[in-house]
Amino acid sequence: MTQPARQLDCDVLVIGAGFNGLYQLHRLRQEGFSVRLFEAGADLGGTWYWNRYPGARVDSHVPNYEFSMETLWRDWNWSERFPGWQELRRYFHYVDDKLDLSRDISFNTRVSSAQFDDESRYWLVAAEDGATVCARYIVLCAGGLSRAYWPDIAGLDSFAGELCHTADWPESFEGFHGKRVGVIGTGASGVQVAQEAGKSAAHLTLFQRTPILALPMRQEKLDPDAQRRAKDSYPEFFDQRPHSLGGFADIGMLEESALEVSQQRRLEVYEEAWQRGGFHFWVGTFSDILTDEAANRSAYDFWRDKTRARIDDPELAAILAPDDPPHPFGTKRPSLEQWYYEIFNQPNVELVDLSAAPIEAVTEEGVRTQAGLHELDMLVMATGFDALTGGPTSIDLRGSNGQSLAEKWQAGARTHLGMATEGFPNLLMLYGPQAPSAFCNGPTCAEAQGEWVVNCLQHLREQGLNRIEATVEAETAWAEVLQQIADESLLGRADSWYMGANIPGKPRQLLSFLGLQEYMAACETSVAEGYSGFTLA
Ligand code: NA7
Image (cartoon, rainbow, N blue to C red; front, side, top):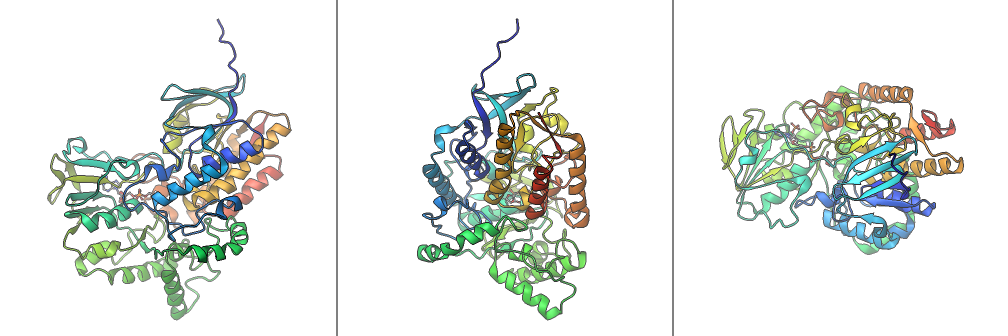
């Protein structure tokens, strides 16, 4: 007996209630689409729901990291230049109140599978709690950093103390006070959590495999009156934001090469960026910092000398800021720090150099390296994410020929414009692989890519169409574009999550498009050419 055709429940199912998902819900509803949103967490915020470890805060400075709609920024003021996770969650609730979003969101609803039915051209989606929905389109906004990476370390399960991952922090956490805390990993999360643990832990042991090239954040308290005055320039600021390298209206690279200026000029530029703090020193100095080895090295040397001056013990200083760069500066994500290097001058903080003595196992008592056992009451895994592809492939998404997305991407992610993949019609992805994701802050990308998706779905509706799929040829061409960016920059030289290289066995490929403005131009070209690279039906 054939199954009766299922009724469509909605035009669009959005997956994920972070910046991208909420923007989609709001804009698609505004344009008259019926929309449901499924969210795995119990609340809004995406990244900011799960990453609630002490010290978690955004590395994008105000007002770059918020929606550009005047109805939202007019009455909202931040308390700090780099807001923490609690304030970001308050912002999400504020956005929810203003835009009335929650009524269409199912929380605690983790999507487990979705199957495309090519006859009826709809997606049948199921969640772990048994909820199902039948939607014409899926807009996948599950986040670029949503699947935590737990390295395969022998004995991890045997640890008798508290064990947690920064990306899934216990809501009930009571603090580090008086504990012997171990942190594995010195990426952005490890730096932030170590700064906090260093304040109150009886003993903090930081296990470093590769030194992070962390930059001064220069946090500031923000005055509401000054922010109100600054808002006169917000319309211009937010107009400028997408026309940038990485979604920062006020950070841009100079046209000069680091190698063509005098030593004095070079140092002045570095010093100014250093004093401004945040990402200025990363992507706000010379044009060739991320493309030329010698230019890059000059930035590294400046960073190394500044950093070493803050660490009392010269041996420790050489492990944290080595003579020679562990990888070209800026090709792994530089974390922003506030007092990270000073914690190593404290008697309760110890740095363990895993490059000299790797971890052998975790035992009931703590972490055993080749040099001995470190006894711990708490072990924090700050070991990162299966970035960009991990979220989408953790859902059993099955396209028109029954193949799963995980199978299709086994040898590497393949997309057109980072938004669609052949064999998976009517699935549009935001902040995923081969889009600007890692090189663009969330809200900027949510609006730039997000508007493209909204316009695309409107176009389909206006033309009486209901199917969109990327072509194989377009995917091949897009992969070449990404490869070219890797080849022409120094990005391919680091074993970073940008290259998929932090996960053993993951195919090595540049997973994000560097250059938001160029990316949006490519998206607009496709539209101007009648959605080139896609088959519409
Ligand atoms: P990252 O940046 O991927 O950092 C993970 C850290 O964990 C990094 O220092 C790794 O060392 C370390 N790591 C991973 N596996 C191991 C094992 N097996 N042993 C020892 N050390 C290990 O993740 P974050 O969460 O800090 O930051 C992710 C992004 O969030 C960040 O880039 C921002 O965009 C926000 P490695 O460098 O691989 O030697």
